[in-house]
Length: 409
Image (cartoon, rainbow, N blue to C red; front, side, top):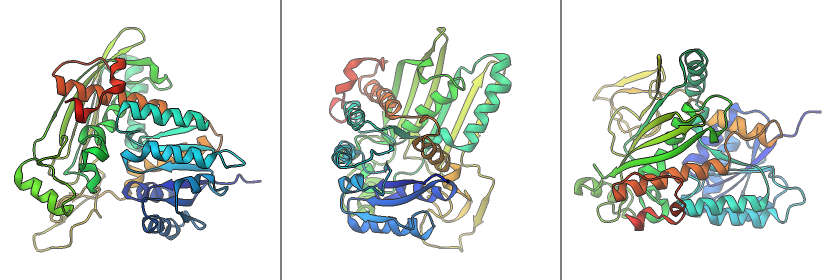
């Protein structure tokens, strides 16, 4: 008898939820059966997408997350909602799951886990109370180009010449697509919180020996710089204000549009490794700047996620409407630009969802859990504090639990 597919409910009906749903066409043994969102209209639109592409024939829109968590036709939940709602959503899931006859099989949550380390620990504590497996959704660790290149470099390079000692990761684009990312009280931070979570975790993973536990690398020092390079300038602040119809006033109420961080790691045998990461919302170019490097004693790795093997060119006579139909965060409609044929697969969404579906169906353990999301948050809070105070921070400092970037700078 074939196994019943994992029936997934999505919390959130926005951009990232749609990316996940689109990736499910490449994932076996799962289907979308529910969506809850801030508005019922948003949930219904996302349900319509799932039905249209054939991954949610029986999907329905729910009035609340608690109602969806209690529904017996939902086995697992993927949380893709705003940063400021994470604790509230987890409490709603706890309320709904208490009404179930059979427990949920798993809960996945998009990066970052919350706005602060304290909130992240609260999210994890609620999940522990619910008592189901968790997944921390970090797509970069499942991107095919990174998965394959790490495997080859460690097998052919590190096994003969010694482990890699420096990882670099950069992710930069022209800025987020929704107003709430630019609103500090909702997002919890700027580009460091939004995007460096990707780069820090990917760099750590690249430096970690295949099969070794996360604890085999211990972060011991973090130094960072945050700055506003573009969007606090009056002309660009006005652009944001106009784009988001007055919801955003970045000139007066902002976080950061550029961040860089260096993390010093220590291996179990005492070797020192480094990761260098940069993130920005002030990059202007063809699509995104999204690169990774890994360096060892006698080898190196370079991955450019913007190089998907396809480029298109439009002359100045081609004057179409603005959009993101060529590549995510596309910020031009003319000239030569990269074209990513299958973004959900290219960026790792298909791979990560395949992994967590299999794990929640009982075929292995989740590779990333809420515990890992908490550890990423420790490093991000250490980076914010380092930038604010101009000193190196130990990410193991328990004082980071109460650190709040927006009030402590």
